[in-house]
Structures are given as structure tokens and as C-alpha cells.
Length: 158
Image (cartoon, rainbow, N blue to C red; front, side):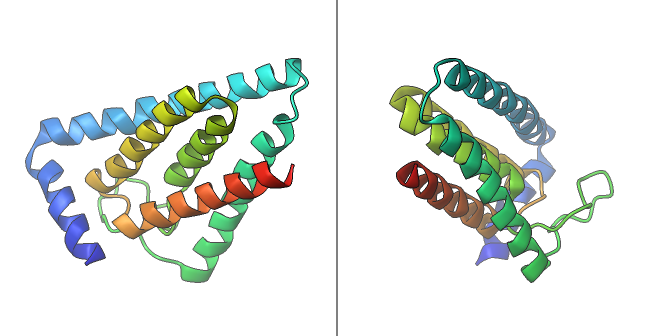
């Protein structure tokens, strides 16, 4: 089922350069936006001496370490064989998806409106990773679950 969904979505973008270009744009622009948002939140939380600063920093670190461990265990190759697309690392789970979602859910604890907008954008990033051919749907789903659980864990511990 995972490969079936992947090929259905990927073939749409493969057949239509505008769809492919749109999802490349989504992937590149929103990913950079997350870096700016995360950095801004860290600075603001530091200036405010907020209790949210520690979980806001630790949740993404923990989620990415978990991703790294899962990748080493499963060693799942990326679905796309294009040389121009990221082939330098394993596919399962998606680092882009986990990063975007852990930041989104962490922001949800701080500001519900910004958090909801970011969760929607994170879903777009996840979908874009399938359409451009670098991840299977399960890579995205597991990345999202890892991110959500990491955020919940750290924001409830601290």
C-alpha cells in the first residue's frame, strides 16, 4: 500500500512539471521558513526567560536523535532513483517531516494560532516529500508521530 500511494502521487508530479515545481518550491521555501521561525522562537523565549525554552530546544533534538537511530536500524533506501535528488541518507523516517512537525507542535504549546498554521505547513512539507519522490508515505507518517510524541513528552516533563 505504501509503494502504491507513493507511485500514484509521484507519477502526478512526474507527468506535470508545474506540479513538480510547485512541490519543490513548497519544500524549499517552507523548510527555510521553519529555520527562521524556530530561531526566532528560541531568541524570544530566551529573552523572556520562558520555562518553554528548554523543552523547545530538547524536543527537536530528541526527535532527530530518534530519527537517526530508526534510520540506522531500518536502512530504508529512498524510493526515487534520480541522481539529482537527495540519495545521501536513508528514507525512513523523514527528517524534514520530523523537524517541521516537532517545531509546529512545540509552537502549539506556546501560541495555539501559530502552532495550527505551522502544523498545516508541516503537512504540506510531508506531502511535498512524496510528490518530489524522496519519501514513501510511511516515512512521513512515522516522522510526524515521532515529532508529536517528542514534543508531548518534553513539554509535559518540563
